[in-house]
Length: 252
Image 1: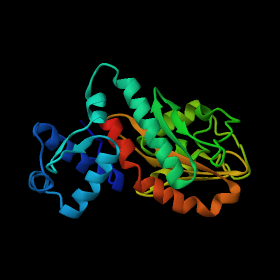
Image 2: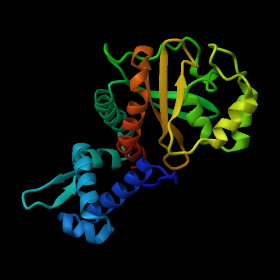
Image 3: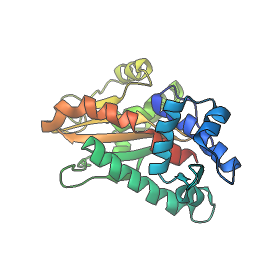
């Protein structure tokens, strides 16, 4: 289990959750919350919150005597056989819950082989998916997803991407200057979500937060119709707070 260091709340939550899981795995006959607090040095209030999340995600179970043991989801994701399918199914359940929680379509995206890729998403009648009118691979400069992914690359990585993909003007709000974009990416704090305020498409606003595990660069994003733009900041904060389960799934 490995996480790339990102000084964000989801990172710290996932890091602490990994410590809890590793302790539970070592104690095959079960371990109490008091013992977990002693072994992990995590305060009881925070431990209780993380255990609640781990139980909801199926990573741990509480047996009759109150001790915690490994859950079915951890066993499935920890197994080499069928892990990819198990991970997709688990992430989809997590995304579905997150969609309902934040009231927006949500997406997992990764930067693979120099390109933006949408891996999974959860949408519905009340939470419509973004209309991909321009291929996301060629519009990273205009999307919250693209800016979040590029923001996790080093300067040379960002330059390389922009040299391969022309910064086309998609709306009147689109940034088309590589100097301006690179400056904004360099100054963006990792704890602040990247936003797309009708830069990719008129009528849609988006936000994205990093979920980087190991050497993989990724992000979690949401989109809202313009009429719900007043909810974007609140939804983005909720997305950031609830990113830990997704990050944890990718790190196991």
